[in-house]
Length: 128
Length: 400
Image 1: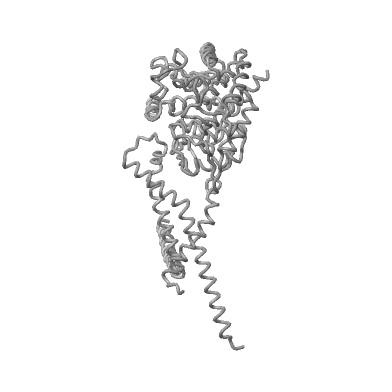
Image 2: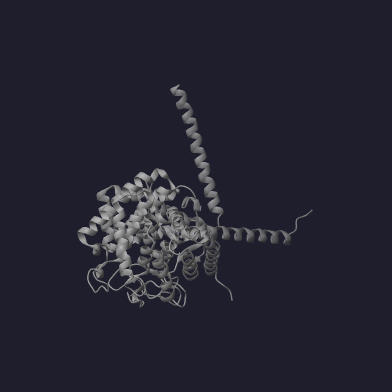
């Protein structure tokens, strides 16, 4: 029973490893297909989200009470509060803008590529 | 002219970001827009109100926590300590009228607040709840008394009695009402001082509402006085440009520099209090205040502190006023209350969207706080989310 479980586990582990490797490869392929500008936008958006997620999980949100004018926080907590507010503002405004901009640029690149290909095809018609 | 490739890339990036910004900015408010029922329930107490109330109930049930919270507010402004009590008592009464399960707890906590307030007043004088300049100076009507303190204590007593009769509060309310009316009658504009030779519209309308509630509770009749106040105010306390009541004036009726015109941090509350004094006039004041002060920017609602062209100076009531927009956090908080009271659903929804975006709500153990607010701000919000039944009860009593 136990060995069977272990056996099944090792099969599923190897499948997991394989699927993770496939996933990473697919991501790399997708990354290499993306326009450098699109990649730059998306990387910044992800980094901003990661930074915000970190300060949120660390509980910095409570330091935003500095905005109330009645908080008894010290200098360090006030800096943490300002950091949270700046990252929050970025997540709700900057990140969506970066993602939309990435989509727009990628669409523009694809449109230009397909037009170039079409022009190329029309310039050199295939033999029937 | 040929444009170099790196320059074209930068130009492309900037253009993409600008277009993306133009797409996202008008949609931003949708991230924060919530269902109004979460804040105000047509029957019962809404989810958000329950969570906000839990925070206040925890504070008032724990003497150490209460002292800590009140001390923090007192350091900035002793008025906030006092006002947070009033708004919380009003909210508790409305919650209990909406949901019977709250009656026992509401009476218990309201009594604790009222008794603590009366004890503090007895021991330290009414000045305890005033800012520094209220401790000395020349009071136009002797002996010194503040309508700010008398009016809100009377309102708390009356609200508690509207929920469930408390015999020991009968004489306390009657004494406050007599004291308030006799001082108000000494002024040609029927208004009493909150600070030395400073009558505040906010406090005078609170006093009027408390007088009306006392009439409903005890069968007294001050309707003639209340009607005279409205007539006098229409004649002498209205700003000619906007038709709105001004905020601060001397006992003789001359506008004070600190509030010579209408102010958002006053008029929203005043119009709500006047609902039980003269409903038509209250609605007119709300409509005018809405036209002059209510604004919405990209789906985010806010209130200006002053009408355009009547800008005053920032003070502890207005809080910081955002340049160009003229937006004030305290005026916007009180606008939430007025919009709820006057069923202005569209404005209320846009104000709550702003609250969710910039208020930094934080929930822990079923208790909600708005981090950018303070206990008095949260008490105003709680009252805004629960108000309704108490005023209905007063109106029914007026008819009978």
